[in-house]
Length: 341
Image (cartoon, rainbow, N blue to C red; front, top):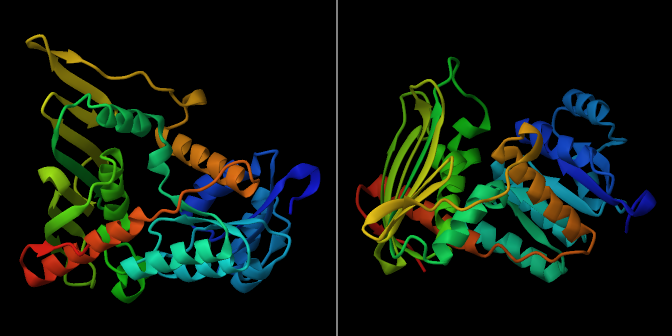
């Protein structure tokens, strides 16, 4: 089913920051997309967003799920309802893009993946960093052996402390599934594992730190061992005290080292260190890599909804959530734990 002029009809569930900054602006400017409907819990806010982006329908969640004139749905809701809404949309014959995390548990991730398979529909994961040209260039370099044998990966994902406390569902463990690990640790770990080709993680040790007000962690320090003896470390925080957020990935290999962002690769050749940073497309018009990644992600989703491309089931997300689950268990028990296979 397509709209006028062969457009695909897409609905967006959720009117938070990522919808208003990424999904809605990018989709609304595409001539091959009819942005058909939007929904969210705050009717006044949803109507304001609909008017701003010229969206003709304001629906409740259930109406969006069952609407016969919508081909694909972007799920950009709070994390704790991702899996339920995505599964319902898939069962109703819609292709679905789900913001990260796909689910809050390994079982939840498997459930959504199985729902897509059973319905014969496509499930696209909203890990937009995978579509950034610098990340794709780094992944190719690692796969081609440019860094030699990888020994360690270090990810630092630190968001500056805000003057007023964060509030809402992210601060309630029963709804969020956790704190900084489930929020920004999930995409940070996905980035590290993605550029490595998603090796299995065998064991993990984690430390979480919070405060006296909330029941979720604000700081996380994690050390894991992946297949082949690769060491993976992550430091993530909601309360970094500095002038700017710090997002950094470092990969240490036997023949070279990679750092991003910005991406730089240096190799040891002929007895000296040389700059081996590959060329890769830069976003046009001064657009950031972050926004460019979302643009490419939505390019792919639209192509899938239109039948011009096929989606690979994001089965690696089951393994990622097993790692997250094991990290929380390690922090609770104060010891290194084995990640279930």
